[in-house]
Length: 132
Image (cartoon, rainbow, N blue to C red; front, side, top):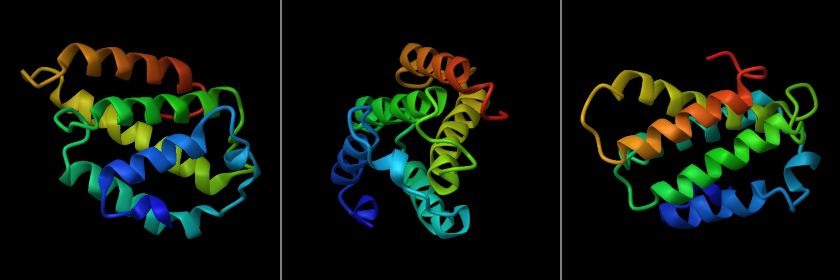
């Protein structure tokens, strides 16, 4: 899958385009969670290695991607029963970001205010769909 591209910017931009609200691709995908699990594992590993959560030059694009995930879940474009693999992808990425923030918010990290704001908004938008 192209989002496993070794160039992180290409992978993020692909996902941003696919998850864009004007695009109907994610709504139509019915990939199982088991088929999606290797991709989810790979993406989370890449996020951590490249420090996407705060220090990456791609933080703004990554924040946009997380927001698109949250909007798709909140607006029920992606539903756990209909799109289990993509729901798992979005929920896992959001959950990993929230988990990172809950562990490191007391530290003096880069982009503290932006990360705090994004974290709060993601929880607000998805808390009725995802257990944090």
